[in-house]
Picture (cartoon, chains in turn orange, purple):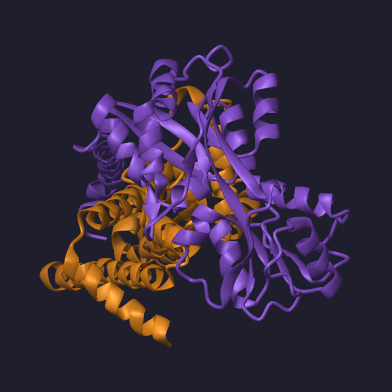
Length: 234
Length: 281
């Protein structure tokens, strides 16, 4: 109980203090997770759309695989990206290991299946509803995907937010490929793990509350934006 | 159905552009020095705050930024072997010598030492407090089957702990001896576990002094020469990994063993106590 009270006090002090090294960690966390989610969305929406509208051999297997990969353990994704980006790995020459770029790549690997699998479902349902109409208008499938993405944008936003939740909350992947280097690759979750290992549980929990707060701000903004867009554009 | 499907086609492209811009923004940041090296080191040096004390001094003097990846000694060595660090800064002499012998690193220097302490519950169920003989204390813990939290992660501290068991003629095994619990994690996590289940644990003094969640744990055995804990620093072999920043890495090593670096190490204190003792030759 004393820890919880201490954590609340810590969280408030952290927010009130605006400590520059904390601001740095918060900014990097947002930068890495936003970039990863944008990149993943750019890959996942066309992928989900293709799986929803096209029929080809192995499609079912791919859908099942994608659904299963929603549960990809972050530490496994991190290890795979580490081996790829390590100096002794296939892409070692890029020198990306232990940089924010590597963390974006690892989170992108985690988020892509989530957004792709969820958007596949959304777009498939919309396709069932509008297929005939779209065909009668003479729209090709690629064009139909684009239309359905626009029509389903509110449901798809939830899929993207689910991906964002995964990105900002995971610690296993960014710890391995980022290395938790102070002022360089330290994000909220790795800072929490570090403070826990130093035994400063109140500070760790305080940082955790701040992280939840950040997540709430992002989700609330997305919700308000959606409301605004609905009122404004119908 | 009515509007702007083309906007939607543009979205992925836009997203890609934005995320690349984000990645670029994330890369160069104002406070960064022009040159940097990556050091694979141990949790004991990072968690105690030693690097937080040393690195700004070195950077002010050399202009080189040092990026520390803090791992267990075993894992730090594997990262360095793969060429993912420029300098290795760890604490297990035998493995360090082997690392150099196998050609992974060059120019090993001894930098400093501290010591390990056996910590345990204040009630001391195995009755080991007061002795200076670590092996005898370990034997008594095994006899009493008192809970013992081991790192179990191939770190320098874990290797040192296994060495003490060996010198006591014992080889506890978590599968056979339920009182011997391998956490498989870092020093801090292991101390958290030990504090929660009133277990004994071997810890490096630096992490112990800086640790905030001691609970009912106290130091029960210290001062045995077998608990001596020397740190060495090695440049990753540039002949094997051409991208290694040999000049900057060597400059960091030279600074650590120079009078300036050595007195900076001696000047690092946790709660008024000196944690690491410089011993470069």
